[in-house]
Amino acid sequence: MKYRSRIAAAILTSALGALIAQPVFGQGCIVSRSSGEVGGPESTGGYLQPGDFEFGDAYRHQFSFRHFVGPTEQTYRIEQGTQVMNKLNLQNFAVTYQISHRISVSAYVPLMLASRHQHNSPITYTSSGIGDISFMVNGWLFNTTENTRGNVQLGIGLVAPTGKDDVSNVVDAFDGKGPHTQIVDYSIQPGQGGWGVPFQWSSFKNVHSTQLYFNGVYTAMLQSINDVYRTGATPNPQTLTQFNAISDQYLLEAGVAVPISKVKGLTVTFGPRMEGVPARNLFPADNLGFRRPGFAISLEPGAQYVHGSHLLSVSIGKAFYRDRTRSVPDVITGGHGDAAFADYVWLASYSFRYSRHQTQPVDHHTSQSGLAAQPSAKPASTGGGSGSSL
Image (cartoon, rainbow, N blue to C red; front, side):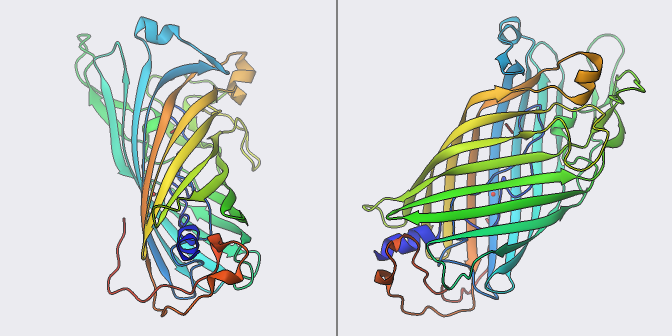
């Protein structure tokens, strides 16, 4: 039973990273970027102990090219060669500090490299840079020393507009007009240009040798539109779509985690994943400006491997339902815009725990399921480290 305790205690880190998750969000033309989190408790060696640090690096890749209006794919776009193709590479660096047995604080710094290209155009737009940095305060609802087989963690934080929302490229369409400067589409901008409040939760429950989990994050933005004028946009005093909307974003994940008995330290995971952008923000706003609301639902198999204080996780989300919903400007004008979605989202993360605590003997038979028996923290490490669209 010892290996099962180590495996399940390691099922993902407290940093939502996409990630993140973590409240950093991208889904092709829909800006919803998150790495997410699978399972619990928080890290290798069970719950983080007071004074522990955890460092993480999550990576997300996706290639979006299938256009949808509502849930219907516009297959003619690929047939005619007019599809827009977005490539997103997102790294999310995270650090968590455990203040007490229940309370922790985290910081997340996303780094994005992206491109956007229409198949029949000679222009490829690119962007790179630090995204919107976020900070979280998380707390376990139930006593961590007594609830090793199930718990719920809630968190609230702040997203700061540190990422650029006005990245531009000098491009030449070879139309005789020569090179000109153009603001790139908001789907590949590193930042949104506004402040936000992320709400997140993580929950797990052990059932015999299997762990069930349900996690999510909702980032509520505090402004309505940014002040970046969209290149080539026609001014519209009714919809204000000449400016980009600052949109809420969300991620939901659920599933099961099962240890592999023949490979010490290995766990497989599987479950659904839903992420997207709502047409209306949570906090009062006019919901005007240009946005592409919508969501994708995927099935996400994955694997996690733990060795000492190190945890490696990989997963692939395969979309089976995509829906580009109507925005408020769409409703006002009677239209219904489209958006490009990806078939797959590729996720990988590495985390490392630094602890000053010494290992204590653990009786793994005291739990009905060795999956999440609560071992003490790992021995102190001599070094730190780091290494989390639709």
